[in-house]
Length: 414
Image (cartoon, rainbow, N blue to C red):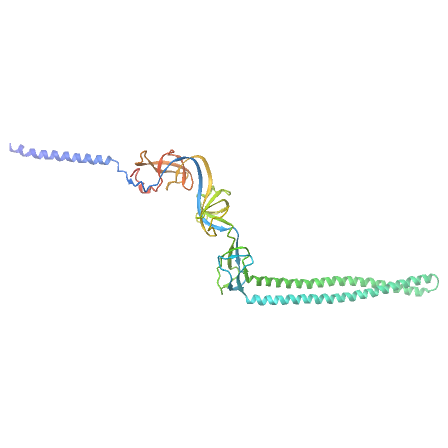
């Protein structure tokens, strides 16, 4: 009877242990089936927007600078040295305002030589002209003498012919006078030809001398132009923007000396992301923010090439410029691409891409929770994006960066 009394407590403890083990495993299985708790997010730091329906403007934004429409770069055309700086950057200049004074001793010497060569050529021309005119006058005098002798011989021949018909002059004298008349007539013709040749030769020789004079004058004008270039002038009315030289600096041909711009006629040079530039068209309206006011304009030019992931767009500035608008001022431009009379749109979420599908957190009706949903987006603007499917007007969504909650399908707002 002692053995059954000792086995009964052990059986009870075993049954109790098995029951507790089964209950523990059932609890673990139940916990495994429970969904993880939704993360909690502060509502105050979360950007929330409501889906709207109505007219929508499609825009792209770009940053850039103001650039003068009229710019003149002054460059050096020969070796020189900077002697004096007469005007500093920022100064208002006229077209004839001297900016720099340069020096070149070799040019000064060659210019003086060219001047004397020009004067010598002019003197040689005048001397040759006088000498040839004297020769021409001698030929004309000789021609006049022969002409007179020929006329007298003709008169004598006519007289002897009349007397011969009357028998008062012998035939021998008639033949003699006739021969003299023919000889003088021939000499008169030859002298006329000689004078014509002499005149042609005179013109040719004078033309040759004149060409030498013109060559010497052209060289002298070139040297004077180069000498004048040693005093660098603005060349246009405007403001001196850059002067990248110093006194005493040696300059090589082609060195940029200064930059002059007309400050009242400006354009905006904007950089637009290459992915947003596909819909740009010349003539589209642009709003330029100079940080001190807005200026309206239109697209003037679209660069056909992409540089560093952006497309350069030139925009006009229409109307009076705000105070402080000047070249190289940083600005922001918004270009209007298109308008939709009726569209469903919402503020642009951080992760949203135009013409693509994505996920977004949609708030519950009471605003206490947000559920992740699939949304298909359409065209995008600067701060808004078109909704094609997945949302309805009046829905509230989270626009902030939700990458921290990628593993959660819902979040709680407090």
